[in-house]
Image (tube, rainbow, N blue to C red; front, side, top):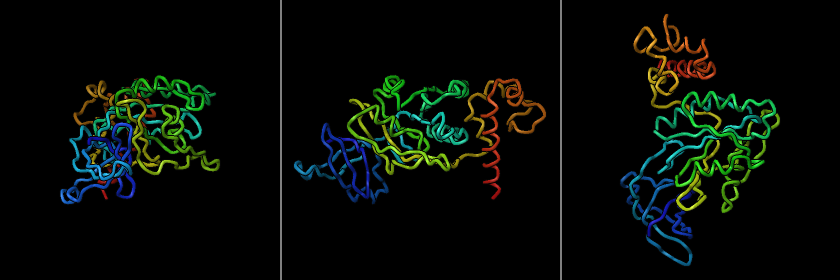
Length: 291
């Protein structure tokens, strides 16, 4: 039988076949070949007991894509969720996530949640910054169910990893999109205004036929791996049109005498916030290589 791994816990893999879910173990040959089944994998399985819904994973089918963190397979796109307020968005963390997804060639949609709490009207500004950077953005309110149908349209027919910091409303949004799995929701620590982790493992959830969302544990930090400082500018798409005005090829956009990117920042063509994040990440990468 063919199915899809929707969850993996403590060496057991839960494989969805049609309307049934089987608890499976992976055959020893995978360890021998140094292959590990991942959530999202399409597999062939041998049924051990139809009544008890148990089986063995016999074959891992070819993967369309593979993410390292979170370790999942066959993802078509990422929906990264940040709250507009409570907690305040950490844009340096958002930029790190966007870079991570681009490294793995996964298209990314940015979802700004808690629109109903945007008394200051800052969401439009946030959207504009990232639209100008080449990303699709969408404001929503899971609490008031604003724009949930638009989210559903973006997910339809795809497997989407849903990620973001703890406390931004990921689980609440997932609960709005489907009713087969009720995700535990957590509050915000009033002292540090940081979310409490509620998702402890990756789980694939069916929204519609051929439409899956992958909930992953919330993150509070992300390192930049396998990236040289000279490569960082490639992941800031909005820099490209202005780099032709840089005097030097391979300009770092930090201190060179004539730099089209810095000129664009001063004139408003590039977001100063995005540029400052670039500068901080560049220095982080430089220091990492030094030590």
